[in-house]
Length: 41
Image (tube, rainbow, N blue to C red; front, side):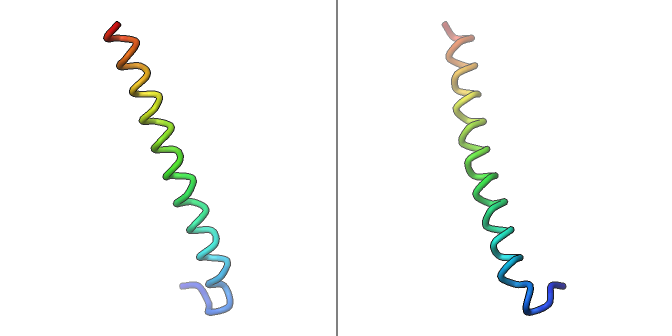
């Protein structure tokens, strides 16, 4: 487990990863919607 002094770094890294996953999921959704639109037309 992280020592108490490392919690700021841990929280910062965790928030960065969560933000990356959030925007990655949105990008995947947009790409998937575009592929579905292309196939439908």
